[in-house]
Amino acid sequence: MNERRMDVILVPSTHCNLRCSYCYELDKLADRRRMSLDELDVVFERVAAFFARSGVQSARFIWHGGEPLLLPPDYYHQAFELQRRHFARASTAISNVTQTNLTVLDDARLELLRTGFDSCGVSLDIVGSLRVNGNGQCREDRALANLERARAAGVILGGVTVLTRANRNHMRRVFDFYRERDMSFRLLPLHAGDFGAGQWFEIGAADTLKAFCTLADLWLADSWGAPIHPITDVIRAVFAYHADGIRSGIYDKQTWDPMLAIDREGFVYSYDDIYDRSKTYGNILHEDLEQLLQGPVHRAVIAETGRRARETCATCPNYGQSCTGIGVVEGARDYWRQNADGSWRCEVFGGLIEHVERHLQRAGLALRDKQSWASVPEVRASA
Ligand code: SF4
Image (tube, rainbow, N blue to C red; front, side, top):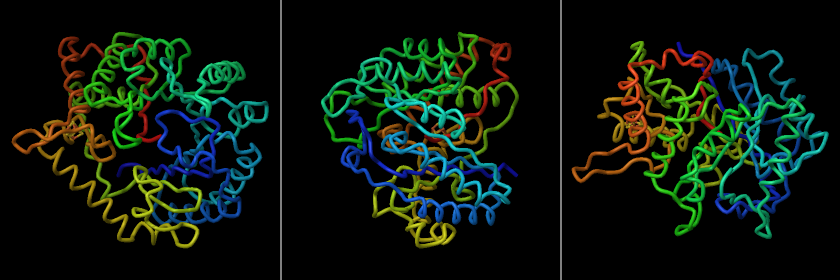
């Protein structure tokens, strides 16, 4: 049986010091309220009970904001202590990760990143920064200075780069930036619908595919082996199937749904639906998590993902072979299109798989010789 894993995206506060142009939480960023430690205690208690009953072997708590580092470090130290208490006798291996804009960093926060969190992703645009404050001033310079300070202090950081019209043609610079620092990173394309329509920085599926393919080429041509999510996940799966005959299997949320999101008030959602109260499973502060996950909203979300996979992936030759279908099940709608005959075309993930297959055919599967290949860990699919 596959290992049963879980990602819990936890938003204790949406307060943020920046107003990034593409942020999907703009109307919530001035709100300084936070989930209390008493409420977090209930969350951990109920999550731990659910994990124990469901046999979850490993789980990540992904602390999101707003800007998570605006909360006092002591809040997290106390939260981790509560968490340790609830998971002390559990057989679930727990880790805590966060994603920060890194514009606020003092000694206490440095220590929190070094010893409290297991890993941390830093949001950086690298080119054409849209990471601005309320006055429209770019704050990426501050984040970059703090990045070097944190790295010098021994903090292991990953990167998160949002793909926009501003940086879509600069993937080599993005790649070189992270390569020089030996930082794994995630390229996170903007999706239509996450912000008001008609913004100049919007991109389409073709931009995303082009950026993914460029990064795949750069990575494949280089001895550097740190993961680039989701590109190296795709390379790994294509290689495993074509070189070693190892099938990817399918991503089936009906069997096990490995992701949930909890907002500041305790409402639980699928990650894509966070803050949409019409799609909440209910409130973990008032009900057991197991009850919430057995409720009609969660069942409807699962049914919808199944329908989407049947519609788009079921006729795809990659499905279950070199692709689990996670891109469609968890991805954004602008990644696939309907053809004139009514069938669906998986533009981004299908396109990237074809691109990698062509590379492997040309290279005669020489990727096996890539020095650092064996060290490429699987990158999990969220945050
Ligand atoms: S390539 Fe696209 S359509 Fe094919 S299985 Fe993967 S996600 Fe589904």
